[in-house]
Image (cartoon, rainbow over all chains, first blue to last red; front, side, top):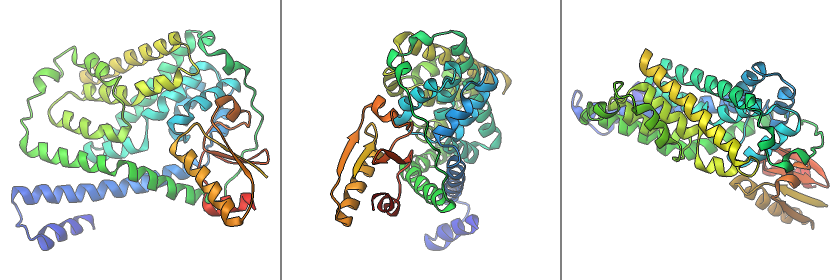
Length: 315
Length: 76
């Protein structure tokens, strides 16, 4: 159907002839934009319906008093499906700690939530295929589990601001939603996300298409190909101060991959940008002392670098 | 009626505040609308995700922007 529509626009409406470079590029562009936007709409809506079953209050309950490892895995998975925006990071953190969720488990949640994201998954799937999308999700979860466990082992409970432990939250009833409310929430959420990201999606596809045809593919290979050992740590270092959501980073990722930067390096860059950002550190500073923030950044940088090397080695 | 809008200042929190004030006007009701931005104060309601709406000490909705019809139901 999409193929048919792209045909209609390119050959009939615009009247380009088949086989020419521009025609093919435009056809590819229209087809891909439609495919990915459609996929995004369906997936974001589906995810938001799942999310409506996991309000933070329930997630907190599920995680409290969970032991290490099982708790970290559960937290990483719940990080994917629990809805929260960055301005809720602090109250979520306080709520988790207050109800007895171990610090390391809380971190597994905080790491996986921005990193493993349905928008990133759809884009990676649409642009690079299911294998890369799957790898991204699996490594994102692994980094969240391992990172959270390491932070848990460091026994840094005294590096959390004192007032966090003094807050007592009342038990609230978790309101159950009607299907009508879930649907409304899903529609609203899908519309919000699409409004925010459509421009990045189109940019990613356009840039990809252009580079595909015109740019010299080996330009960056010399600097950031699999042979350069410093490429991965450098990518992580560059990624930390940059801030972007998963959708905003995909156009850049697309360019880097098309230009021949090794996949592990790109993956490390992407993870550093989404999971470690300066604004997030500033928000977390309200509840964490500098030593714990430092440890968090350090552990994340190390695990992400390791993931980068691993994939450069095996792919 | 005592209304509190909980939120640290994200876009959705401000939208909720506007929506509440509009609805009050529509219903022709007088009520105090207080914006709560302080984390310990927000959490004293047991709320972790903002925006949230509290009417007469009861949390009506949290973590999402309710529809205009829902808000009308909460306030009337």
